[in-house]
Amino acid sequence: MNINLNTRIKALLDVDREKVIESLVKINSNFSKLRNPVLRNLLARRVTIAEACKMAKCNPNVF
Image 1: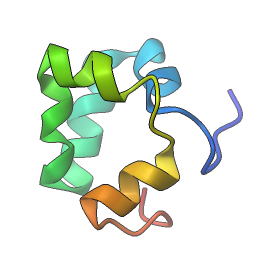
Image 2 (image 1 turned 135 degrees about the vertical axis):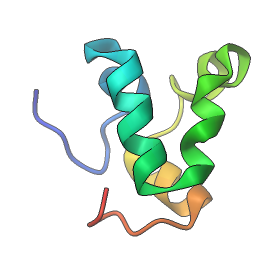
Image 3 (image 1 turned 120 degrees about the vertical axis):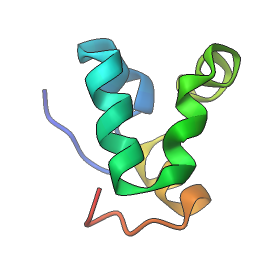
């Protein structure tokens, strides 16, 4: 899979949801919202990596 700033969070979660969520939470605790199935379903399909980093105030290069 080619991952860039325009990659949707859902594409990452489709690979291995639990590992991806845990890795993201280690980067920034704001990503713990992905553990909530309702929020995950609403946001993951629409949000790109760049947008998620902006919302979580996380550096995309660290991501």
